[in-house]
Image (cartoon, rainbow, N blue to C red; front, side):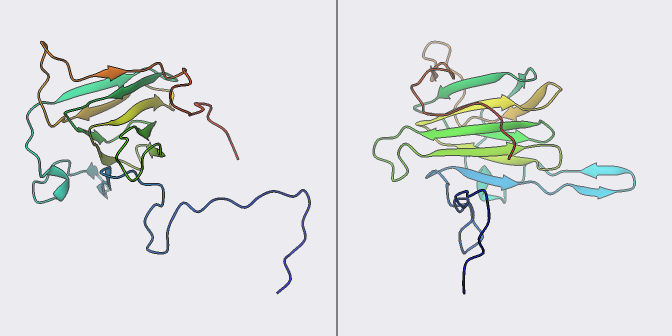
Length: 177
């Protein structure tokens, strides 16, 4: 079959979904589960924690809410010991992950995940994966984190990089297209 000729020329998109329907740019150890709100004429109900789900196989030891002002970025941050477990229900935000684990099969891979009121979810970020959260909405973005280790004020497990440095190759511009 002859290929259709069109102008202007443009390269095709890179695949984002594999033949099995799963995303192709996943970082080793990252878990993403989309939540399914139950909606009726009165409103909605969304289950957040169900210990039968594999997502919650590690105990809950600490929890805190994060708020991000419109247009702002929190990150880059990384933990060497704890995994972060986000519960995002109504924030308009994107989470960008970068695998900094030298021995990982997905070393230096970037991954973007978008959340909104219509696309809530659970996200597990393993130790050694840099992450930054960007509020893409017009209101404060809020989510709850259930890290796998409680905060230790004597030895904080937190490492930071400026999101606008060149340490991680990511462009924060939100483009149309």
